[in-house]
Amino acid sequence: MNEATNKINTSLYSEDLAPIPLNKRTWNTWNYAALWISMSLCIPTYMLASSLIGGGMNWWQAILTIFLGNTIVLIPMILNGHAGAKYGIPFPVFARASFGVRGANIPALLRAIVACGWFGIQAWIGGYAVYLMIRLWIPAIDSLPQIFPASWTLQTGPAICFFLFWLLNMFVVYLGVESIKKLLVFKAFFLPVAALALFFWAISAGNGLGPILNQPSKFATNADFWHFFLPGLTGMVGFWATLSLNIPDFTRYAKSQKAQIKGQVIGLPPSMTLFSFIGVVVTSATVIIYGETIWDPLVLAGKFQGKFLVSVAMIAVAISTLATNIAANIVSPANDFANFAPSKINFRTGGLITGIIGILIFPWKLIADPNGYIFTWLVGYSSLLGPIGGIMIADYYFIRKQKLVVNELYEMKGRYTFNNGYNSTAIIALLLGILPNVPGFLTTVGLLNKEAVWPWISGIYSYAWFAGFFVSGITYYALSWSKRNVTQEEYDEVSLESLEFKV
Image (tube, helix red, strand yellow):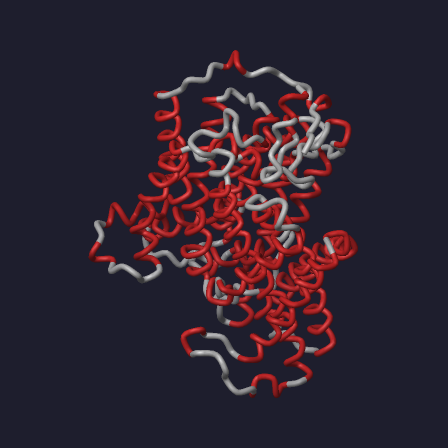
């Protein structure tokens, strides 16, 4: 054991990436349930549901789509969470088993970029809330000269508030994660109360639940419904596709497998469905109250009368968004970037990288309309993350039979080195899983003429996560099995309590 531990490579090891010892794992079932309830109660969840209404669904179609999507994504969530709970390792380290000790940077980077996008979206939501509040008291903010190119579709007033809110996020990153704890407590109490208040307002102003729930779908035919439902379902799966990969970052603290499994089952589908129902009801009510579908809660809040009420609401949204953003969209990508150079990139540096990419991704464009939010953002990145999930699950369950040699995950020369640190099999499977979705993505964003692609090829994009997951998973299994030269007898079960990492 000592010989093995002496091989630990400092370029692959840091305190943040080290396995959590068994005696330091304290999360139980209710910790995981609370985690999911907290992460589900956020503005993007509301917008997830309301975007389906904005896209044409009625209330029960939207709720069913959300419930199905979250039940489906729960499966890879639990499967990937197993390795974290068993070995105490985070996602970037777990990915080394299938992609190689250097190749793991590929899925870590793809996952991190998606998290950067979410960081940008949350920062835009918080900044826009600040803008709506300032506009009430200083209407001249709307008269500021336009300084950004017209193609950016970015007004000066909202842009200034966005960058100010972005700087606040970066300041919290500089202070460290501990500084966000009180804000998370505030969010846990405020957001459910605010959501329920909005729910009861919608029922009251919309003349009861009856007229709201009687709003018909806008699809003229069944074909129109299925054309929207399939990518919509993929978008629901894609909403948590990032967490379905890096869930070991959380399950590494689990007291047992049962704790992480039961906690996620209790916390994820019910809380997402319940909070989404509020979004569905409120968005459906806006058609009755205002004569138009208002799917963005901030735009809706801006229509309320009373400066004080709107100001308090917007400040609260900004604070709760700040808390969510740091907890959900900074910690994991910061770890992913640190995986590139553990000795050089710390949490603060990784957080700054996340923040910069979050701006460059133009988040205000991603959530400008329901179709952009679902078809471009949610479905688009699911086509990258689905293949990674398929590869990792195929490797862990069907090739390695849930057995890893933890020490060698931190060694440059071991069974996870493959070819100079890269597993070519995983990279090939990843590319083959992404490839079928490329034509559909290019036509969706307008970079390729729809007439130039056969409909059945571009149609694969509607199943982006599913197609990538199964194509990459099956390809990886087939290629790995054909050249498999490691027998399970070579894996020695080692107590994590006896692991000594000497660097």
